[in-house]
Every structure is written in C-alpha cells, then in structure tokens.
Image (cartoon, rainbow, N blue to C red; front, side, top):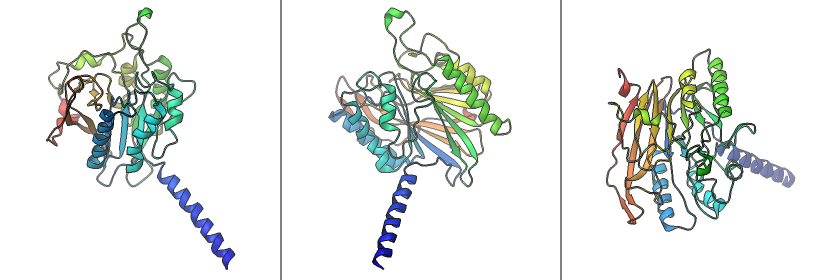
Length: 345
C-alpha cells in the first residue's frame, strides 16, 4: 500500500507540474463576448534600481489589473539599463504574476546596453506566459513572428498578429538617415506568411494587426487628415529609406492597423487607404516629453474586420521637472472604431 501511495503521489506531482507548465504557455482566444483585448505598453525605458522606473511598474501592474487584457504587447524600448537581464526579469514579473500572456517587439534602445537582440530573446522567450518568439534565423533582426488568435469556442483562427523587428539607429557617417529600416527579407517573410494564412482561410485574408517600434514613413501622411485623432508634438522619426512594408500590407489586404512607439509625444491614429497608423501612449517616466504617460488599449471583434482603440492617461509627467502626478480620469481618450470612424473619407 505504501508503494502504491508513493507512486500515486509522484504521479500527481508530475501531473501538477505538467499542468502548470501548460497554463504558462497559453493559447490566445476570443472571450465569451466575442472580444479580444490587447494592452500596449511602449517606450517604458525601464532602468534597474531606479525609483522612477519602479513607479512605472506600479502603473503597469494597475493597468493589467484594471483592464484585464487577453494579451500584453510591449512595442520596444522596454529596458534601457545596465544590469539588463535583471531589469528584464524584474519588469516581466508583472505579467507572470498576473498570469497574462505577453509579447515583445524590440526597440532601437533595447540592444544598446549589455544584451544583443538574440540574448534578450533568450532571456525572455522561455519565461512563463511569454509568447514572444525569436523568429526565423535567416531573417534580419530578432522577434519576427506571427501570433494566431483562436475563436472562443473552437480552434479556428479568427485573427492574426504580426510582430516585427524595426531595428535600431544608424551612424551619421553612413548618410542613410537616423534610423534603420525593416529589411526586404522581413517584408518578403511577411508577404509569404500572409499568403499562406490567406490560403489556409480559403482565400480570405484574416483580420490582422501589426506591432513594431519605429514608425513607417507613411505615418507622416495621415497627420492633418480630418479623421486623424490624437496628439503630434514631434516629427515622425521614421527611417529615410522606405523598404515597402506599408505597400506589402496594402497588397496583402490583411493588416487593418499597425501599432508603434518610438516618438514619445505622439499618440495619434490616422487611416491611409484602409490601414490605420497608430502610436501607442508612451509609458515610461524616464522618457522625454510633457504629455501624460499611460498605455493604449485595442479590442478586436470575433468574426468581424473591426477593432476599437483608445488611450488611457495615468500620470502627468515631465522627466526634466521630476513631475509624476496621477491623472484623475478613466476616460477612453481618442476613442475610434475601425472602420466606422474612417468610413467615407
């Protein structure tokens, strides 16, 4: 009897470990209401052992609790610090403790400290609830991958999320502009992934979103349009070289919107030829600029080519003046519905 009891205890223990591991590698699915909520944090610029950065962790922890997202996406410039690995591990405990899936795209500053892009991916990809992937070895950059969102009550794919590495800055001596661009092999990789997914869906493009850090040159074209909403307090800091990413999105007909960061005092959303160009709301206290810090929320609709998005402003912030004051509002600021908010324009 003792041997049987011991065997059952071991079996239960192993089963429990397996179940825990399965729970920490989650599947993305629409909820019972047919919605899928994404929380976008961008430009956190987290610094290890900094009380200013630690105060941003409180913002993020509260946001995850209040919004109850189905997925958190960090769109670059996440950690800008010595003790880089420790900083990543500290920041990501928010999502691990909350048991929420989370994904990362790298920014231009993430790879400027102690870890390369590949080393960052090695640090985070196996953490609980992380669904980030390093991506194909033969493709430029780190973090080019596709996430599928399944239907609530089946395994059918209903939406697709493309994550891309938009790379880093360029040395002035090269004469090619301030920022690198999404490479042709990445554009071609996206085209092929989109083609395969559309074929999988009987020739109908999935409803899709794209996430990366540095905005495309076309972001400049939507500012000033009648339906564009939000703030533009600095120029669009895009690459000088246009490698055709937007053109690929247009021709593939799946991506409804792209979500970026990089420019800390821009948070606008505008639409060009059926595709929205969207900035997140800068999150980090260590960043420049005088607009409030917070985050962006995105809600997809199951079975529809539709999403809602808005920003939440949580703290008035000025790093130079050391201002960090709570904003007493829960407004869905700059709320839009795609495609209705842009219809007929």
